[in-house]
Length: 288
Image (tube, rainbow, N blue to C red):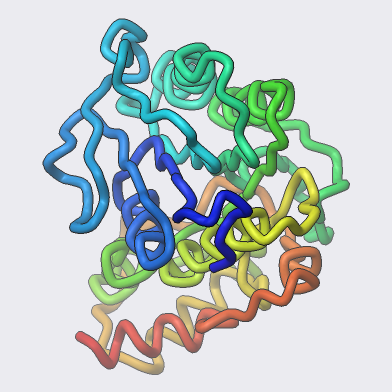
């Protein structure tokens, strides 16, 4: 990672230092001083300086934020999956954090977003310039959070992740193995990214920002092969023992049918460890 002109290690705050945020924070500790903010600061990864605060309660932030921050990564997930929970996580929490930051001037703000801001249901390709008209309140609040970041007064970049999977996110694989997933054919297109690549992508963009590179305001983070859900299920069934589909097996996801383009992310020089679902799920199946 490039060192800033101040000739000291960059100072980075990861707000929402959970599963994804913690993985990003861990990667950045090699060349930066990293602070991880979460309700329970004892649960941040080793090498990360824990900060205990609840972003929905601005008084808990008083006097907590370190000075001289270069980068802030906002990576919250809702504590409840209703409209208020999403608004608290993506809009209110960020607004409170920015207020607590005061007159500090960041080199860059990164906002972890979701491909749920796209509602396309016609198998079309979507990229960073595609219309964002969320079909659900969850996507609407995520999009409102994006706007809060972009209007923060700091240079900002949105990272729109598709579905994250991996060794710590095994639900889909287990549903197929246990016969609880049986999509119709042809099923809608699905998009995903392995959790290792998800953390690597954010780290890559942070390193570019610290090196002085000019970043776009938005990047889609998704692997290189959008694929129909039934094709993924059929491949898993061929690669590992699976129970017969149950009568009440789920038919599929609820994310429309679109194909997420990662061309802009690839153009920055990023390369995937797991460029498609076969590589990612193969590693998980082999790992057991």
